[in-house]
Picture 1 (cartoon, rainbow, N blue to C red):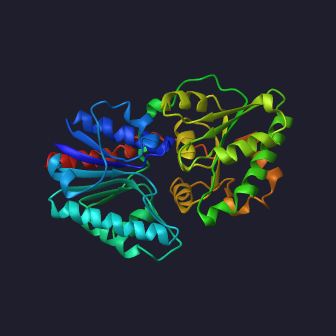
Picture 2 (tube, one colour):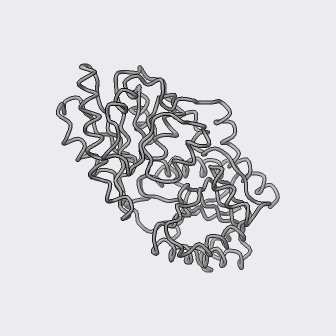
Length: 359
């Protein structure tokens, strides 16, 4: 079988892990993969791992016929946002592509998604229509699942984030007094306005941590180094930390295992990027969540976490003494890895495999 594989590629650790997991699964099933991409700056690091994967520039009738496409699979988390009009218009473009796939007899599978946030009404009808015509939709939080199943009850399923299935990412390391900080740079207007207060908070936490831990270290993790790069805030935070000899910047360069080797050296984490929280739980590292999106709220609710956390809008006025003491003590942070998370997260690919068996 031949498949168009749609992955968000921006030198982003979380999306690369999801994409890698999917392509390895499809290769095991004997599926020939065609990845939609147009910018080699964002896809080159990813695609070099898979020499047999071909790049196609678009989803068109010509692409479908030339490569004899049997199904289309899209994997990603925040693939149905409604932050602004631009995202809503883009959703109508995606709906057009999906209708073209349907007309051509191509099955449509969507894996690992969440829905929202709903800050704009533009494109919501297109999102609902996509849910109705999809042959399979798996999502990663209860709130998204309850929304999706109103439009496609038979083909929608709920499983924990697919990254929980990657137990190989927990790399045994000697844990040190290392505070890991997953940084985040906001680009949409609703988040951009918090970049300064977010950096000020992270700088203050880092300086206080190093005061309390004379032999401690800080690792700044930039999960995205593409066009939505986390480097701007990463360097601002670095520049604000007094003891720079104790600080290391680790940017994702396409090498997942190298990045995770450094990640696993931390004994406590501040997780701003969504998958920083997922990976900290997977790797059994206590994590303080910083919330910039409803997807993080939904995750924490599903994990039944009610400990310390920071909303992005609260960075300026949060009780910093409380936050720093929580990081130092660690026992009230998110730290509830359960084996069933790993087992149940495999459901995304199991559901896809079941669909492929019927084709």
